[in-house]
Image (cartoon, rainbow, N blue to C red; front, side):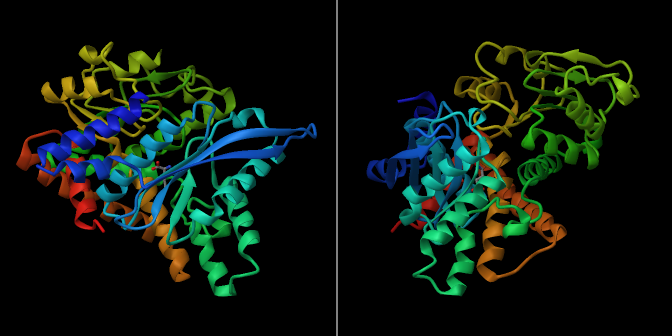
Length: 424
Ligand code: GLU
């Protein structure tokens, strides 16, 4: 069993025991409802067929349809997908959504494929899962290396499969089978920025509990992709001081707030964040310097936001972390050992299942609009997202302060309570 799955299951077992749940109830929460594994045969550009192993794992649907992304990556494995499906059940419950947890994946490197090959793989995957997905059954979304375009290809294929037997109104609703679609094809405004924006909402809710002024917070963000970039940009727009950012090649840090937009423009030009310091038009931030990803994590900041890879804060560097608040925007960026060590030292770590739940929360708003035939403004979506995030935070904070455990344990406890209340 891989580490991620072991950790996810152990956290459920540990929390279940602390809650005094019966062993059979805990066992049921650990075991997924269904594990679907497929072999896809797809024609490559060279005319030859290639086989791909693909999964859809449906963990628990007590609260509603299974929900969760589909990832394309050479390291996808059955264990990894199962771990992520399990965490989606927790994440959706934490966010107060009427969804269970699921996850999908295909083992391959999409960066080695042509666009046509990617489209054919995506569509073949839908032919495999067509009978187990649908707006009230299982609602996939983008995840690592998948995006709106891929959701659109998948939806087109699902419509093709169902065209004959469905009425026009039902075909409309079929759109709600996938979220994270391009806005033109039934997606919602605000979905792209949602994970980052949700993380900022959670951070603000925490700061207000701690009676800390956000304008006084020095923040370092690791990762400048869809999650890290929007977190940095939105947090900066809302008054926090972003003093360091990085991408996979390294980063920059400065005494004063960085100009996130300028760094993004520079990254587009140069291909990396490191070196975007005092280059071209970005020279108005003085006294800055290049840093490595490792150095970023150990900076003397108030808030650390690991928004890229898992396991970056671990037993090797946990003693050197200076931040008093960590917001887990990536999945599992703080190892189990480091989480316990830092929590004992009084560091507040907002767990991924809460911190990055803004993405799936806005997926729910997209699904809701599709089901009701509505189209909302971006302002409305963002306002709802802030409301959902602050409600989710409040509930977990209450449990946390009552139980004096960790925010992670409080999040899992809140989720498990909600899931078992709806047990069939
Ligand atoms: N893949 C994202 C996640 O892991 C979003 C899932 C969704 O929107 O359904 O949270």
